Length: 518
Image (cartoon, rainbow, N blue to C red; front, side, top):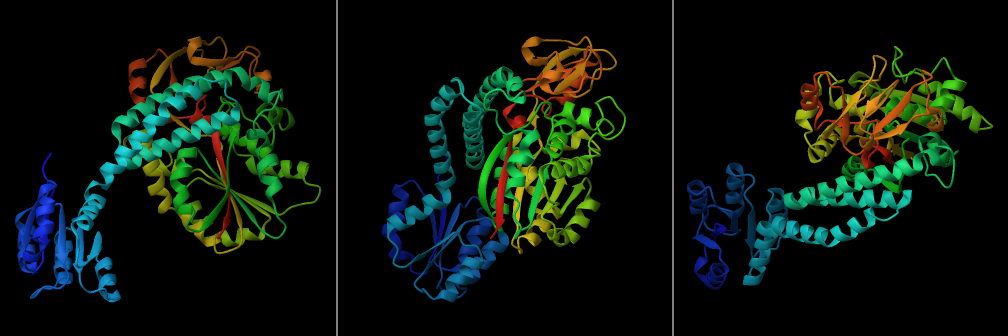
């Protein structure tokens, strides 16, 4: 490893020999100059300088003037200002020019060393500490994964895994990230078995089921409505828990997190099923039975989520004895997003404002081409980064900042998550078989039973049954269904894309966050 190269500019450089000898013994390479002009020349000649120590008071060109010219040429080069002058305006000007640190004379060798550690070694030290901490917890997480967990404990495991993903992302600890990825794969295998054992009991209300899509409004939204404070429910399509954690620091600038909770999406974990269930307060087969003109099966023509506002109104009328003022707005394109931003304050006259934001459609430019997302979001880290970049510049964030100026309650949630699929699984079906990559229903399906949760009697899962012999299958873990025709082409096309509809921690465990304006 090359020595760290330091440029030290001070008109009293001869008085700094103890500090210079100390740094050289510690393995640093120090170049010394006695004025700002020479410092600039050295920066011009050497493009491998790692950090500059700069005296504020030098004859000729001052330290602040030198700093400005260094930053003009090399804006990312760390500079430490050293000064006898503790005047506030000097420090403010230096900080305004983005110095990395400052020291007050006389400086001792340990001060200098600590500054260097903070600037040069900080990322490495954080990375090493993060990796060490994760290594210690790796065994504990593995033991928990293989225990007989309940649904609350699975939420805790998932949150732990996400927390470590974000920490390892921040510290760029590649080796540990690979190990964590394998541990998450192991967790999803166990979680799929857990869902296979318990899902049908939950939807049939056997035992103590978790909050699920069909009772989310009744359990987590309606009880929060207040007569003196408007509530805004923001449902972001496909929002995973890790994406929420990426957005949390941004949103927390204007809102206070009151409660961070999760619910379990019903199967299939897809918009047509889970979101209709949320707004109807009913399972899919119950919606089909009660509102046959509003429900469309997968193979039916037309939009599958066109009646969400009507279903929400029906649910509100069932639950509340007196009418409540509410509005429902669905955002599916940039034009509608701008309209929402322009008119958001008008919605605060309601007791409940429901906003459905199809932000995945925004990211992929209304699904014009899958390759766009595939290139921009090749893995989870990139997907999170893309989500953050989009949100910070979105009409949605602008609208949220406007309502933050009022006394409002904000509830952020989703309908289901997504998982990056990696392993193909062959399925054979007839012409009536659905096309979704993570779930299918049809007649006479043939598949590898190890890869799926099969529901031969859809009624038990409260799912519609388009034909008397129809059955459902749901992909486990990171599998995706492919037909034998053009298998290799579609295998390459869909591998490493983000899909939903099946069984994974990422798809089923969904965030629901209660916030209030600060």
